Structure formats: C-alpha cells, structure tokens
Length: 107
Image (tube, rainbow, N blue to C red):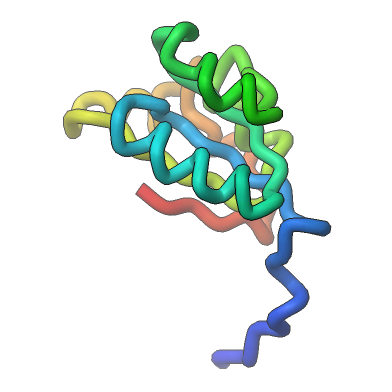
C-alpha cells in the first residue's frame, strides 16, 4: 500500500545522510547537499578524497557499516560493479546488517 510522504519527513533538520564514494561525482553531489544544510557521514577508501567534505562539516566513517548505522538515507557512488558488490554485500564491509528497517539506499 502506497502512502504519501510528509514533506517534513526528510529535511536538513532531521535527516542524517550517509555517503559512500567521494570521487569526482560523489564529492560534488555530496557537497551540494551539505551546503543545503544536511548532516553527513561519509566513507571512502582513499581518505584524502573526503577532505573537502570534512572541511564542510561531514564526519568520516571507517566503513560502510559505520555509515549505515549512523544514517537514515545512504547514497553509494562507486566506480565499478565489483565496488558496488564490496560496499553492499561483503560481510566485513557491507551495511546490510547495520541497516535500520526505515533506511533508504541509493546506488
């Protein structure tokens, strides 16, 4: 059964966003949302790529699982299918065990 989404349900004041993959595209998209007022937790395999986002106020997580456990909405922008599998499915990396039932994912 479909339900209407309350516009206030997802807003900068009450939504913590997770971001996995802070390369060229991910960093740009994430920075626009940070500047719009959203709080972010990010993960990237190359920590230096996250620095511009950390400078804007994002927090760095040490794994995708940590991102999922701290976020209500998670975006994943990684380069190759093998990266997607690693981020979403590997038991030591993937967030599947940490995801809350109401959590949303985008890849």
